[in-house]
Image (cartoon, rainbow, N blue to C red; front, top):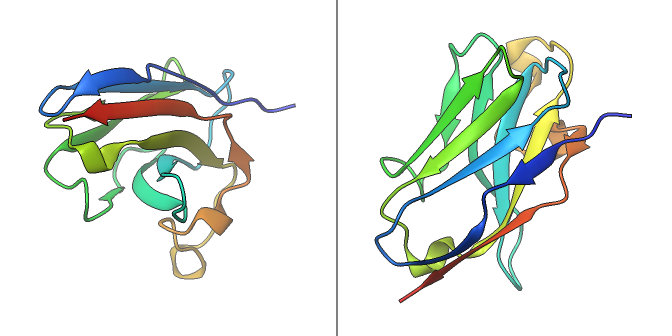
Length: 127
């Protein structure tokens, strides 16, 4: 059974940095990414990266502040979050698309494309 295990969440102040990691249990995925969900809001796309690291996408709310990185050897994806804002407060979920799909048939910013999910890690940014 595939398990994605997130770590690195916590409580920080606005302007601080935080790094999340997601262990893919030694498995290679086509895409690995991050989504987040704040209380009372829908799940929001944060970032995703293709296995070859040649395709990287960010949500508009985090562009320029967050960086996603994939360590192929460790099968682990990281999310470096800088200049955190109060509105970044949410549960952050790691997600993965397991197998190749033709580019014109997949929308990697859509959570429904992802077959595997982690349990989530809480990130709280205080003012």
